[in-house]
Image 1 (cartoon, one colour):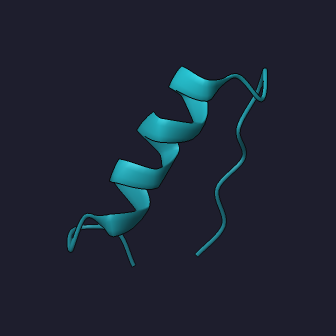
Image 2 (cartoon, helix red, strand yellow; image 1 turned 30 degrees about the vertical axis):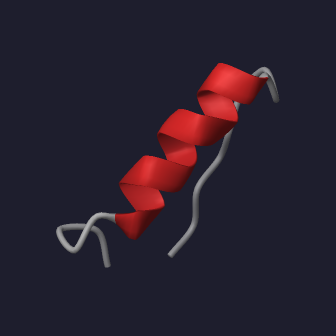
Amino acid sequence: MKILVVGGGGREHALAWKIAQSPMVS
C-alpha cells in the first residue's frame, strides 16, 4: 500500500489515514 499525501496538512493526512483504513484499499 502506497499513499502519497500532497501538502502534508492535517486534513490531507486525516483523509489519507481514513482511506488507508478502508478495507477497499489493498
